[in-house]
Each structure stands twice: as C-alpha cells, then as structure tokens.
Image (spheres, rainbow, N blue to C red):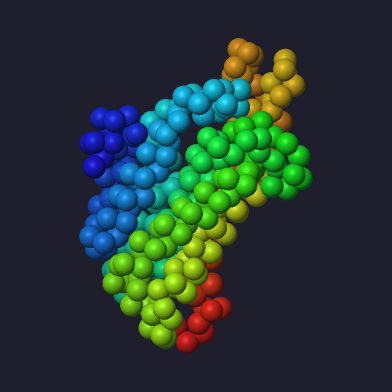
Length: 264
C-alpha cells in the first residue's frame, strides 16, 4: 500500500517508510485495525485529490503548493492510532482500542472538514472571532466543512464498530450499534474542533509585509518572504494535527466512561 501511495504521489519517500511502520503496528494489532487504517488513508487521499486544481487556486495565497505527505505528516495523523491499537492488542487493555478509534476519527474529521470545506464551503470564518478568513488559513471553519468533519468522524466510527475488538467492549453493557457509534463520532468531532481552535489560537502564523495579508507560506504568492506574526513558532500544523488526535483519543475514553460507568 505504501508503494502504491508513493507511485501515485500521495506519499513522499519518507512518508512511504513511515506508512510502512504505522501499517505494520496496525497489522500487528490485528488485520481489522490495518483495514481500518487503509480505508481511512484511501478515502482521505481521494478527497485530497478531488477538485485539487480548484482548491489550489482558492488557497494559492495562503497554503504551500500541494506535495506528497511526508513522514512527519504520516505520524501526526496516524501515529496515535497505530500505537494505541498495538498497545491495546499487546497488553489487553480495551480502552486503548477505543482511544485508537477516537484518534483516527479525529484525523478523519479534520481531513474531511478541510477538503470539503475548501472545495464547497465558501468563505471561511474564524472559529474564535467569526471574522472572515482567507481560504486555507488554520482556524477557519465553514458549514460545509463542519458537516464534512462530522461525516468523516461518523464514517470511521461506523467502520470501527465492525471490528470485534471494538464492538465487544462498547456493547458489553447492552448498548447498541448506533449509541456506540455516536459516542465515537462525538470523540472524533471533538478532536476536529480542537484542531481548529488550536489553529486559530496557538499555531504559528505568518504575514506578508508587502501585501499585509496572513498566510501559511514561507514565501507569499507575490514573491515576498513572509514574517512570523503570532502563535507559537514550534506549533506547526503537524503539531496541531498530532494534538488533535490525542484529544480525540482522550475524548473517546472519557465519553465511554461518562455514558457507561459500568464499562471498565
């Protein structure tokens, strides 16, 4: 799968190597976990390529040119999932399995919201101030993007419920498929919203001194080098994505306990 993704330019060389490691950890936990990871990656890659030319035009002033995913991006989006699934299988703690699903649901919510919102969402607004933002800037949300994020989290949650490792735990106290899937969906949405909040508040921001416009490019589309203009310099988009998956994982476990204290 990593080789195919490299051939299709979805992954860089380093990204393909990282994907092999992440995939091996997932497969070691069980082939169901590997299938869930592959399904998420295939659908996310397809959404990234959908309307790519139009999205590139809309975000030309704010986002760097599209490029294959690197190792850092692979770990930021799939690392928490793979490690949690592997540990859940290794030490027999089902809560880590729930955390793994929450992490992947959060990654799906973020990816689907970004791709769908950029393509069909219109002018985004800041999740904090509601002020209009340039398409592509972190912290911006749209109604279409938000609905897309919910759909992404729900898709992962529903697919995860087909895994015996997950369904056995969540149905242990008699809850049905829909209730369990809703719990995992909510965790994914929480992670996706946390991604937007961190992007709007703490993520490093840059500004073009010539155009006086905010951007996430090192060099603006006008050709001028950009300057740091807020946020924490180490808080990159990849760092935000990693934290969002942690939050999704934690939210899944917390919601499990809140909705069913009888589950260990």
